[in-house]
Structures are given as structure tokens and as C-alpha cells.
Length: 219
Image (cartoon, rainbow, N blue to C red; front, top):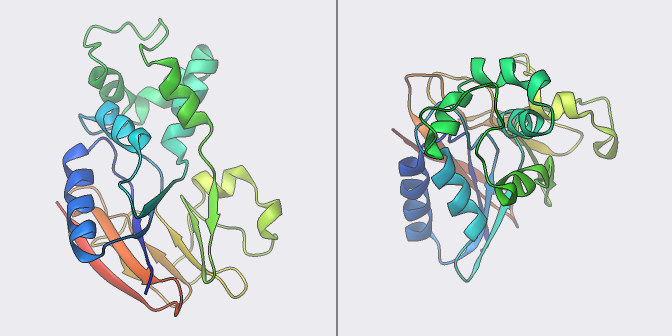
């Protein structure tokens, strides 16, 4: 039975990425892993996280890496430094730059991030859809068809507690801060914990039956 796993916001925690991959690969011989975005900022190893994801999966696995709002901020910074600088720094961007070995970086200068990394981040999709679920970083507008979703909603919006889902689809997302993720609700699953709580939450479901279960939260 093929399985799909989702990993929430990693924010520069390469150790949690490696721990989640080890645990998932011990549970199944193959399947799909959806990374829900926010690989950079705040934590100390954003560069290592990006490089690991760029390498891709071992045989038998498919990886889908979605864009998060922190990747969007980083791409915006590189393209428009004067516009994007303030928001980038407020949201933990200095840690990302430091992971590239630029401890003395001047915020008035172009960040020392390789063009190949920026291009990879800029090309990340905003959404992934399978038979039962829609995977996205932040949220979906339930009143808009999937092909007409707004980038603002996909990257930045927050669900009210009682909302979720999109038609017959269950929505799997990160971005939201919860006390102990992942939280499986009737119409959506959020796999991102609150600051100070467990991090690197991962969640799994059957792609054939649609049955889902909470698997783990890693510190």
C-alpha cells in the first residue's frame, strides 16, 4: 500500500530533517514525501537543508518540495533587496545568511546565496494534489477553485479553528502554530508546532484508502 508522508516547517533544522527522513524510511520501503515549505530562517542550518532537498530522494521515493512564505521572502530579497530586506530580517533571515558562512554580512549588500539555490527556491510549486488531499504551505481559499487560488492565501493565510478542506479534498498544511503538531482534524491537518514545542512534525496517509494517522513530532 503506497504511503504519503508530510513534513512541516523545518526552519533551518537540518538535524530534524535527517531524523524525520530516517524514521520515515524505516517505516516504509518507498512512497512520497511532501515537504510543506519554510526550509529556511530562524534555525542554524538553512543552507544544509536546501542542499539536502536539492539532492533528492533515494530510489523508490518521490519528494515534492513546496514553497513556503519564507522561501518567497528570500527570493524577493535577492530580486529586490531594498524592498525585501526589512521583512527578511524580522522573520529570522540573518540565520539563513549566517548558514552560508557570512557572519559579517552587511544587510545593505546582496546576500551571499548561490544563484542555483535561489533558482531552485523560486521554482518550487505552491500546491500538490493527490487522490484524496491537497498539500499547501499555509491555507486554501475554500470558495476559489484550485486553479484560481491566490498566492497570498497559499503562502500566508491562517485558518480559523473551525475551517478547512476544499470540496472533497482534505487539506494538509504547515505555517500554523499549534501546541503539539501534527493535529489531524476532520477537513484538514496541520503539521507545524508552536515555537518552543516539538519541531519537524511528520504525518502519513495511504494514497489508496485515504486513511491518515499522526506519526511523530521531533524536537
